[in-house]
Image (tube, rainbow, N blue to C red; front, side):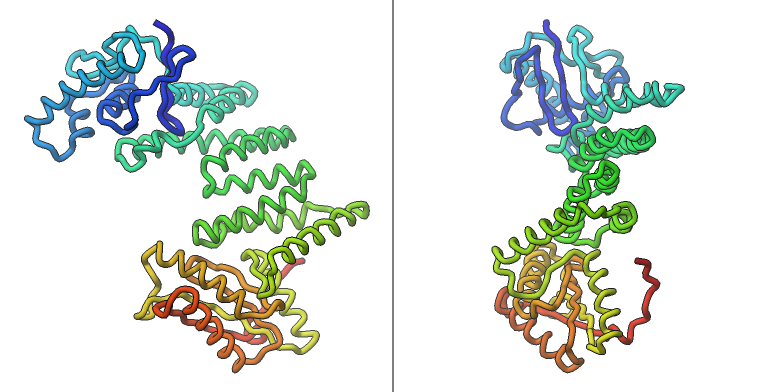
Length: 406
């Protein structure tokens, strides 16, 4: 019998030698879950009671006993139909079930854990490095995403993700100290692809800055901030926002880079013109902060008034909308309404899924009410008459000026 490779990280699949094995169209079938559970427990074994409780929770015990026997029979028959040799694949010893010792097999979860444990036991950083690196490469995604809501998968995932986080953090620090920024970038990029909402992009950006890839670092930063705001509906984390200051501190613009800067500005301008962006400027939250400080300073010099408006989506009772689908749709409509209702010199950003911040320059308190009405009318036009909005406004002159370091 050839070697059986079982993969559960990032999705379930089986290979037998060089052949991909398909156990059926339904990858969440109970006989497949039975195999997965027994293979995950491995040499520890799993009792019949635990298997039945996991696979048939809530069903009557008499029915469950018959179902278990039928399930094992179905599993063995399906393995042969899929092109595998006739073996038991699961054996029972002393009241517990184990992987069949006659079947030579490897499981990616075990390989990941083995490399992690060997790294933990290693005495020096040089000895730890190859084990942590192999572990990070084996971890290609969360455990059995098709069964992500099953409690037995959730429990195991928590442990595996904690181990993966530790691998990435150690590798990032080690490669940074070695000044291997290409390796550092690869490690953090792998982690960010798997877990885009876990701030691994911070390590990516730092690696790019240290490599001198400033333009790429800025693009990744802006893309990530927008992902947090537009996809997750939250403000970017403090660690991610801290990247902006890190870029400002580390990037030393040399005279011969002025052409690159000019090219980047012209490129962005062309994008705006192609999109026919005639309304207010939609920016990320960190860019909004910079615009706020710039307008504050100009206001003191020119005497022009600047107001900051906060627009909040609400339901008919004036409360925050809880339905995520409705809130997401109206949030997009509000962004379009703001952009259409305001001037090109105005700036706005998404603060979270329910709120937008706006900077209105050269306007009065009474004008703000008019602006709000324009936004409200446009929102109802785009999202329907049931779309409700409330707002608050404050003059930048009335705000306490925070400490700002350029």
